[in-house]
Image 1: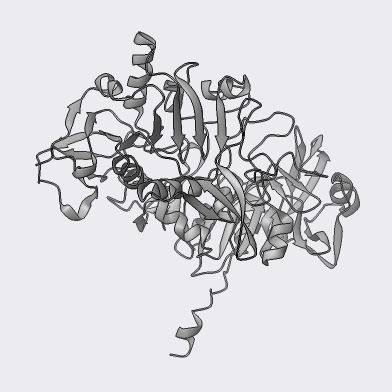
Image 2: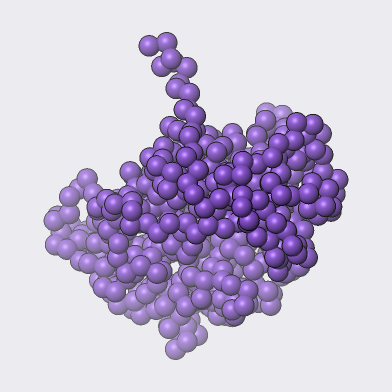
Length: 537
């Protein structure tokens, strides 16, 4: 019987060689094999080896404070290149994580590529395919005719090129072949079979393991427990032991970077929804309420980090907790997605899928809506969400945003109209803007496009932009104001606050004043139509 070695994290670090491509299964908030990464960093501090690594992270590995995950190996000499779907990010007032300092100081080559594509590249590597042909990334920063995903001046063009196939433009991403895969599970038996009973998602563990194993590489699994060989229910094994070479036992591994263990996010129990704290009344809740009205009961929807993540909680308050099936890129299906720096998990999920499989749904447009945040919107309707204006490369990056918005039938962007210190108050069902933010988010050209408005128009996507003072729609003629908040002056508070000319719908409406009152809305959702083939039965 195959039996992997059980090693300390420091001993497992000896398996990594100079120049290796090291792929890590993790997310910014959950599933980080932190002990193994710390062991690699410790070995480098002691011996100056391994050196010149390429680290691959389909989703970020680490937290906003830079004390976990990739920051353990973010040292000049140790890390030469990083390819990631997203990066740990923190408040602008705090010192940025070490990986960001290396990127901004041009001490490392760094790429930010769509998370779903990075997962697919591991599947391609596992089956010895040359790469992935996709439309994800066209006309945005990942397109080589723009940035090609490069994050600083020291990063050369690589990985992405434009190809024509059957008369259409596609992006071709070259497969990434890992020498080492570092994955995480809850339990390994002594034959290496991995189960994920306390994990909030299996993330990409299986595909990363396949990619390394099938190409002669090595697979290191960090787990919380070790069990006797053959004692695991084979139906629960997500990564078979034949793929695992080494096991590192980490009894104290956290379920998320802020959660020691919560069985409600790993699907082991269902917690009453009244345990969720209510959403505080304010501008963000107003926007989330208006965004919620775009949804239908019975539909499947995705949402991103930020204000849009409040929408499921608004539905809970309105008595529609199960009306919409939420799908999150990390793998949760159903339940109530949680907020802030545990975003990426859901309380009471119906299923926990591999991230790779979840992106199969998302890239294929197999859902009705996505709700996303924004940093900037330009006159073309294009959106920047991955780069802070005036200061490059300090946000979490693209993550699954480009994968999701590339094929979503309908997109609702949610965020404030202006940025900076503001004095805006809600009084008696109206919005009172006493002093506005000094920076508009509606600019001539976005700093770097994460979403292409012209491409959305060409592919027939419906795109709305919900702010605290107005709702806009992307139309062929231009960005059009369709609603304004009660109490808002259209000319002074909306049109004059954009850096380009906004169109106004001739049937301009005033937003329902109920959005601007603390009481429940009494929200009613229309029904999602059944499949045409079922309608005849």
